[in-house]
Image 1 (cartoon, rainbow, N blue to C red):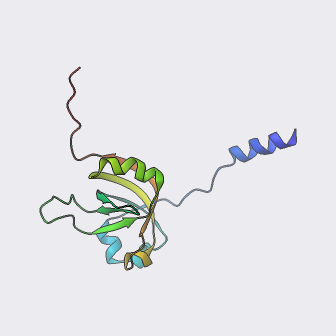
Image 2: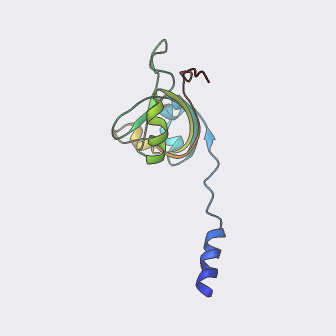
Image 3: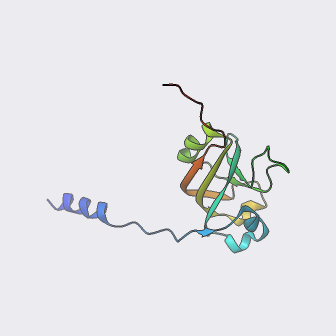
Length: 129
């Protein structure tokens, strides 16, 4: 009888909350990576491409005047990849943890914690009933 009660208690014990995300921009993180190192940030931008190992979030669509702008790599995440990859290019907003060391090296700089929104820049195909 005690084991089921312990299991129930474990299920209702709240998980440690992530810190409140800092709303920022890709440019701000790239300009001062140490300021954001290890912090949770809220970013928005365009995922123009996803390679086998990682996706990248850019300031603008790749086809925009002036190109995609600055970008940051996103660590592989099955849920993120399954939702975002089929919609590339697409506009996203998400919360992620920053790894400043990866901004200057080849490892992913962002670890997604929560995908908050996704909007395909292309309208959905028109369907006739």
